[in-house]
Image 1 (tube, rainbow, N blue to C red):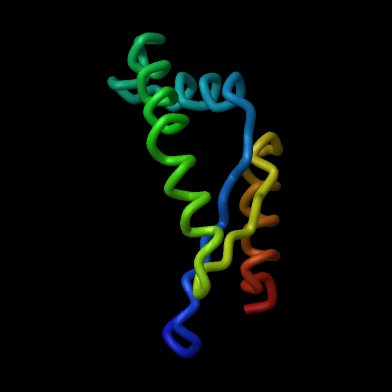
Image 2 (image 1 turned 90 degrees about the horizontal axis):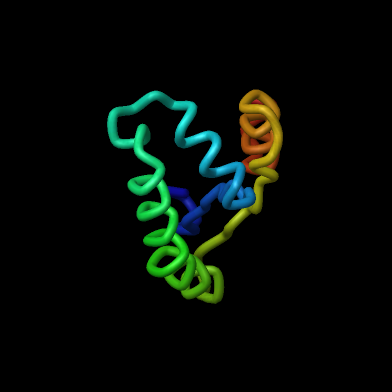
Amino acid sequence: DLVTGVQTCALPILSRAEAEKRLCARGRPDDTEAVKVERRLDWYDRDVLDVLEYFKEKKGYTFFDINGEQSVDEVFQEMITKLGLADQ
């Protein structure tokens, strides 16, 4: 936020199985091999989750967990609602 200086992040939370399914369904060339998708999810679990936890504990950062198991439209609606953008 340019006014308050608070960094805001909407963070979709979903199971590994759902993440795998959605990545494979995108049809991107790097998502066609299960091994590559597994490697990417392993990297996320190993390197990204700790960074997210670090910033969640820092002042000036606000995270909103979003139910990523919903449909794409429902995820979008939850994001804009939690970010306060639904009425804009």
